[in-house]
Length: 248
Ligand SMILES: [Zn+2]
Image 1 (spheres, rainbow, N blue to C red):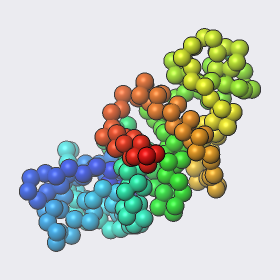
Image 2 (cartoon, rainbow, N blue to C red; image 1 turned 90 degrees about the vertical axis):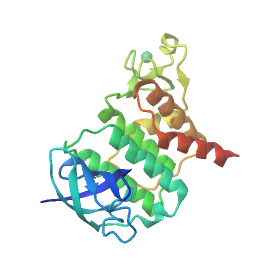
Image 3 (cartoon, protein in one colour; image 1 turned 45 degrees about the vertical axis):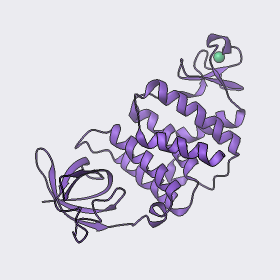
Image 4 (cartoon, rainbow, N blue to C red; image 1 turned 30 degrees about the horizontal axis):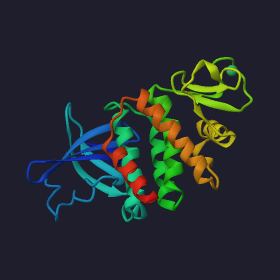
């Protein structure tokens, strides 16, 4: 029998009464588990097999799917689950984690990032900004790291910069001509993207950003991820629809 701390990042109904859940665990990375009878309302596994259940799991390991025996809550994440907007951001974050991780590969960095970001959302920190920080931090694990430290062409560290999706990073004024499709970028956005890449998420202070700066960074990250990540996420489409709904 195995015991692990983790969070449910995906659930699929299986047959009339069962569920297959994917748990991202601290100790063993991503684990697939069969939760027998979990769809029955009185099942003791019904809570533990919900998306974003964060707790201690007791399960039987197996070559393929393991078997879930018990889940004990660590933090119920009530605020996230009660708010469709927070929930949509959290769903996006766990879907990205699911898509970019392998089964049974321990990854303490990603686990810590996931738990901290969800905890901040739960505590009321702006989920849009947190998701942006998450996207910047995930470029490494996704194997699509962009250069935010200076011009990709000449190394110049002083702005103003534009952002070249094609070249994967900033371009200074002098080198801007090397990519005519480079996206314009304010000094604030350039500084913040660099900060997000290097900031220790556990030391995140109060964040108070102008909406237009957030919008600018989001645009850059969206175009960049669309170009390189190969991710096509249901949760991302929903987030985008929600954002356009909010604007109206
Ligand atoms: Zn340059």
